[in-house]
Amino acid sequence: MQFHIEHSTEFDYPTPATEAFSEFRLQPRDTPHQSVTHHQTRVFPSVLTDDYTDYFGNHVETMSVPFRHQRLKVTSIADVITQPRSDVLSGLNLAVCEAGLLFQSDRRNLHDFLRPSKYVAFSNQLTKLSSALLPDTGDFTECLRNLNRHIFEEFTYTPGATDVNTDVNEFLNRKEGVCQDFSHFMIGICRLAGIPARYVSGYIETDPAPEGVLVGATASHAWVEVMAPNGFWVGLDPTNNIFEGERHVQIGIGRDYYDVPPMKGTFKGPNSQVMSVDVSMTRGDDVKAAGSPDGSGEE
Image (cartoon, rainbow, N blue to C red; front, side, top):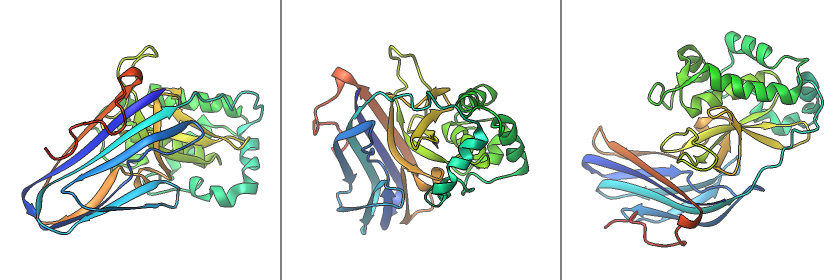
């Protein structure tokens, strides 16, 4: 599938800010399952941007606005082609504990995805749930599928019930949240069972399509990649009880949301701001040609 994605974030200040610094992770990744054919970042006020690749291999852009401004707008424009995923779990016949043993030889490289992180703190309650949902003697593939379904059925997708600072244990007590929370919970369950798991930020096509309507945040989506014993990362989307597919577009990977926020920064000026986010994701024949007018810059 081919998608044209436009993601705009705008900040308005009641009085001019004197300077601002931001970094953003908005450029989709090139992976075996998706290729980026075009990407452009537009910033208003017009300033130069710099870029680097972070510890997890994500593309990061930075900018500084060293003068007075009352409005800041960043727009990411991308054309992405996604490919079908093969079923890398088929044919695996081993228990959860056996899978955990196979990861030991590569534990150094997988360390970050086996330990607690900022929003995935281990607790006694989470440990008990991990033992129940991913028992040592359970079939690895079947348990992962059941875990994906369990999260989808037991928790309620409720925008606004949590925020970006909600950790996994707070979500567990609330029983409702958004894709970020669903993903953090799955990551914690897997890591406690000795299965490497990482957070994925990106987009999902939520508009009606032949495959049906999927749930995702207006601004972005999140899901999980779990390392399979055969060495492949497998994407699971517990918010929708599906595996990662052609309707998912990856932006970044990390230990949890803290590593891959779409945009973060600081400014000097008034003690308040109004942020607005607009994302459009268009499929197929409706995809615009790269570089076509989009209205994302300053009029």
